Image (cartoon, rainbow, N blue to C red):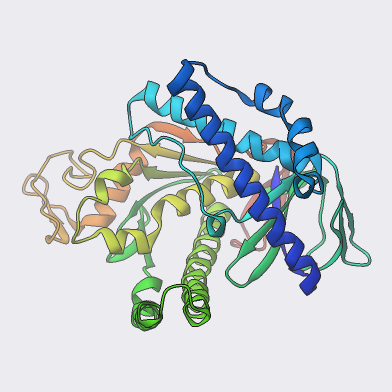
Length: 396
C-alpha cells in the first residue's frame, strides 16, 4: 500500500459539513469509550466492536444528524475505538512500555474521518473528488495516482483540508535496484549521521532555527484571552509554524533516505531506545529536532520499494569498541576523536561507530511495503556513477 496526499479546495459550505461530521464522530468516539469503561466497571463485561455496531441503527433513529453521515464512516470510527483498546491490552501484556488507557478526545483533536471501502469517487481528469452524502470537492492533483484506491481519508490540518488515498500499487512495476553494497550509519547531533564510508550528513537543526519565531508566536497565544477569536487566530498561526518545521524535517528525511537507497542495498542503523534517550533533559530537544525514528522508518520504506532493506543492530559498545582491533575504551560524550591505545587507530568517534554498526548483524525493519523480486538484468542508474551497472527488479 502507498499513500497519496493532496490539498483540497472546499467551499465554505463543504467546510461546515466537514466540521459537523468531525464533531459528531468525535462524540460517537467518546461515547463508545465511555460505554466500554462503564460496562466493565459496573458489570464486568467486555463490550466489543460487534456489540457496539449492532446499536447503530437504533442510535440513527434517535439522532437524525448522525444518520446523515455515511454508514461506513461511522463504522470506521468504532473500528478506531476497537483498535485503541486492542493496542492497550497488547501493551499491558507485553509490559515493555506504559499501557496508556484509551482517552477521550476533544473536538479540536479529532481531525479525520475515513471512507474505508466505498462512498467516494475520484475523477483525475476533472480533478474532483465526489464524497457520498457530502458532494463534490476540488483538489490540487499534484501527481497522478498509480494503482487501485482502497480507502479515502479527509483530514483537517493547520493550513486547510487534505485527502489521503491508500492505494494498492501495481503487482509488477519495474524499479532500479541499488548495487550489492551495505553501509553502517551512526546517527548523532553534531552531524545528523555519519556513514561507515566516512561521509557526514549535516544536521539542519530546523527546530533550533525556527525557535525564536515559535517563541514569539507562543507568547502571542498566551497573551490572548481564553475563548476569544484573537486567541484562536493566534493558535492557528502557531500551529502553522510548527507544521512548517515538521514538513521541512520530513522533506529532509525523504531526500537523504533516497540518496542512501540509490547507493546501498543494505542500510544498518543502531536499534535505539528513544524513550530512554529522551530522559536526558540536556539533549531531549535536539533529539526531537533530529527525528531519528522517522528517518529510519522512511529509509525502511524506500529501501523495500527499491529491493533493499534496513537493519537495526544492538547499539551496545559501538562507540567504545575499536573498529580495527576490537579493543574497548571509555568514551565520554565530549570526546569526539577515538584513539586506540592498542593498535594506534585515530578516527572520528562517529565514523568508528558507523564501521562497527556495519559489521554487526541485526533484525530487519519492515515497513509493510512489497518486497522486490530481483531480475538479473543490468541497467544503468542515472542517480549513481554512470559507469556502474545496476539491476532492475519487479514487485513480487
